[in-house]
Image 1 (cartoon, rainbow, N blue to C red):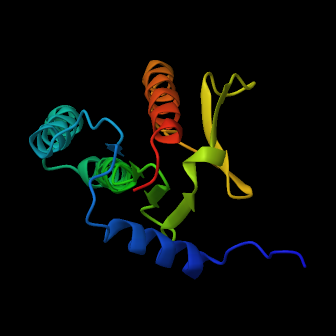
Image 2 (image 1 turned 180 degrees about the horizontal axis):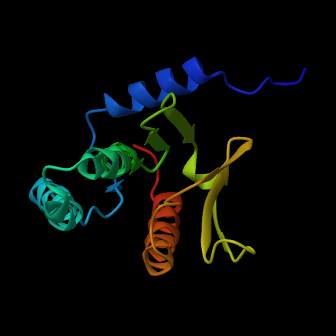
Length: 179
């Protein structure tokens, strides 16, 4: 009898059951992308851009050319606003990883798609890091019949550090007898 792969709801239920455990995990981390632009910085960027666009337009005050030029300036500032805010929303992407001696659970929060969940027995989980043509130090976890990427939004060095920490903690989890 072959076992069918878990459905998204099964994975979510297994993850939620793992999160309701009362015993403390051996390792847990929340992985989030670095956000360099604060709300204040966003406002300053929009104000600076609007002023930089509007300053040359002062020469055209009272002419028909001002209105013609505004037809190009306003959409440019609006586009900047939209794309910075969209980037902020994409920045809510995060991954939460928890590891016990008998379970590893990963939750990936996607800003524009359904959340993803993955659980496995850490004894059978392997951590892989490889260089691809596009990504240096591509990090994956393999177990429970699936391979998932981890920390795709991190820098190469951050993925190396996470790889080292995960290998160490998975070895400890495999050596720790279940309670």
